[in-house]
Structures are given as C-alpha cells and as structure tokens.
Amino acid sequence: MDKRKEENLRVKKSITKALFRIMQDKSLSEITITELIREADVARASFYRNYSSKEDVLLTLIRDVLEQFRHDMVEGPYGIYTYENILLSFQYFERYKTYALDLYRSGFGVAILEEINHFHESVEGTMPSSSIEKYTLYMYTGALFNTAITWLREEKPAFPQDIAACFFKEVSKFLGIE
Figure (cartoon, rainbow, N blue to C red):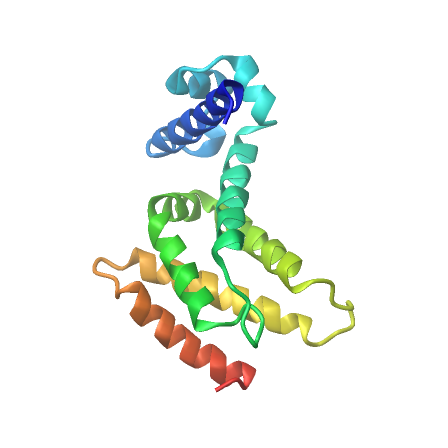
C-alpha cells in the first residue's frame, strides 16, 4: 500500500476511534466536528476528504465491516443461509461488539439493520417487488440482528458456535432446509 493510502487509512481509523470515545460521554448530536478532529488529532480537511458528516463516519464503518464479511462468506446450496455464514455473522458481531453496542445504544440500531438489509439485498440479487420471497430476506436479517444484539448485551453470552447452531436450527425449519 502506498504512503498516501496508509495515511488516509490511519486518519479514518483515528476519526472513528475518536468519535466512539466521545460518544461514551455525549450523544452524537452534541458532538461537534471541531471536537472530533481535535480528539482524532487530524485536520478538518482530512475529515471532509473522507466524510460528509459524523453520521457518515458511522455508516462508513458499518459498510466497511460488511464488505469484509462479504469477502469471508461462502455460498452454499441454500445461498447465504448456511451454518458457516451464520457462525461468521456472530463472530463478526462478537469482534465488533463494542462498536455494535455503542451504535445500538446511540439510536443507530435502525441504521445498522438498514445496512445489513442493503448488504443482503446486494448478495441475493434483485427480486421482483411483488415477490413474496423478498420477505424471507427481511425476516432473516431482522432475526439475525435482533438475536445478535440481545446476545451481545448478555453479561456472559453463549459461545458464537452455540448461538449460531441455535439460530441455524430455527432458520432451517423456517426455510425448510432441515
């Protein structure tokens, strides 16, 4: 990677980490760009070169994580609805637990779910708007997100393998892929 790309990646990570640090004490609406760039120790121009707003920082993080997930997932005979992908989903939620819970507590749960929906739509491809099957996708993503957030909020959560097995068992029944 060239030096400019490395520096830009460092700037983006600094901004993201700074935003989450400040969000521990303030709501997103109370945080100013000036405060954020000071905490991140970056120039204002560096912020606006990468983001249009504080919300954009959060959406970019979610999208970047989903793109990493896209590279790690594997399609099976039932598309994305495999135990391996479900396990991978819970492993990702666990890896990004602090971010996921901070976003959820800050009122960004819907934003996370919307991005997960868009991600799964892009993976599944275009479905006719009249297709009843499209609702299967939203049932899956909604259940996955709700289960993951509930699981992450537990003081002593189950292992990702156990929660994935439980989730896959129920999804398999629902989808008729037992």
